Length: 453
Ligand code: NDP
Image (cartoon, rainbow, N blue to C red; front, side, top):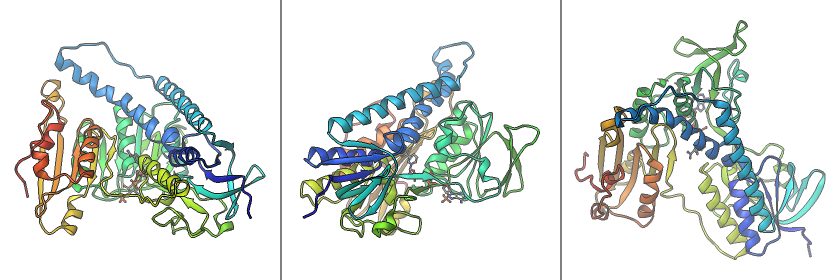
């Protein structure tokens, strides 16, 4: 008969780890969570939350400009980076405290330090061994830089949130979520931004129209976007310690005081001791799990970015709840990765739900595409040339809505409601029968009557 210190030992107190630990404790399990850094993981400390707060800050730039058309006049605006960073850090410290309270209130033991797996039921933190019936790995991921000469002179999103000053100019490499979000923030705050993407497309995992439309909108806002281009090398400038010289694959050189790599993330598995228990990983380090998040070792589970399925906070939360319920409520719940809505907080915002047009064409014989591009009512007076794109993909045989995608203000807020409808299997006829809220951007989704294809 084994004796265990805990029923569940979670490694990593990010979104997924905290949620799984809290739910497991509520189901009566004895739970500990080990964390070496601040509580809350990437989302709270170096991701969703600081990014969104800084995105709000950057939106004021266009808000001030838009105000004139509505009769407002104001003096010269000034932006203070130090104030934004200090206020953002204060809010993050508050959230770190709330995460601690949530765990403590749920009677989860918080163990501060780096955890290493010693065997299938043992975790060591600060030299002390803990025996656990189940171990849950929720260690998240970290940003990676491409290997190129001078890459050490560039930063990643981790350092971005703590820059001592707003850069005068920035070169952002990448065309994914992080690249377009941080490029938009820098641009909105007054920095000259060049975004460099190795291919023709940005947001490549999404419907192709979204990336093309966003490129046009970001260019209108002053972001220079170089497609089919990569950074070849970076060198320091001896005459100006702030300045770096970037050589691009198109032969150009750019001087900039911030080179930001947003070229993807990798699972955090280094130093975890996976080999001590024989836990298998994929080539990129992602822990291999089955549909119940079990690794090849019976007692060890993994969720969130470390399994590299969908690196999204709400997905890690859902995965964590499933593991807790399955282990301590005798459930056999499965996670569905269908119809997961997601938003990119670029300027303008992007939101996506369900299938891309390309995927729908692969999977369905006959599809209909409804698409609308327009200027939002607000911009008839603001003078802004910003436009919205809304697109819906429908299975022509069953009338089921397969995908909904948009670029425009508050896209994430709009898509969330439609995600409920998609979850319920909404048809185009039901969308058409829905009364719009007038005048809104969102109503366009319920008034698109004529298929373009
Ligand atoms: P992504 O994988 O989304 O994008 C990486 C980008 O970098 C791609 O454009 C890719 O190009 C490019 N790239 C990759 N390797 C290289 C290289 N060696 N040289 C040049 N370019 C390269 O990663 P992110 O870092 O942007 O984000 C990671 C994940 O985090 C996202 O996928 C998302 O799941 C999550 N996230 C979610 C957010 C949200 O919900 N709003 C916000 C931020 C992150 P190519 O397109 O050609 O592959």
